[in-house]
Length: 80
Image (cartoon, rainbow, N blue to C red; front, side, top):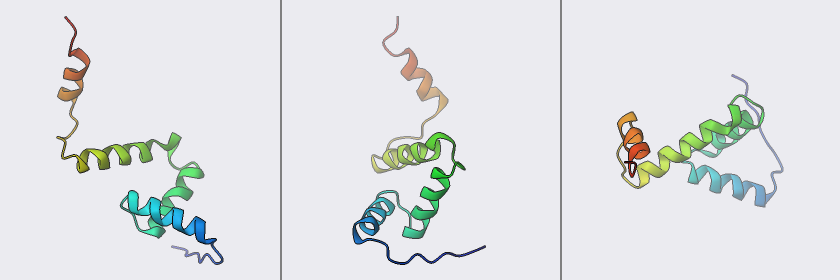
């Protein structure tokens, strides 16, 4: 697999990448690869990013796994 070395990254850009990587539980290299693949189209409509954020939020809040049963209950809740 090819490797790339980036030089002369502006400090503010590096800090934003670092912050985003930390928020998404990725390494800096992983965040850069993810952002490149998303922006170049290998991730349709950013759905992977949304799903990852949702999974991370559910994990942080110790919520149960999202199941079809929970979705059905949410749809019918409050309907008579």
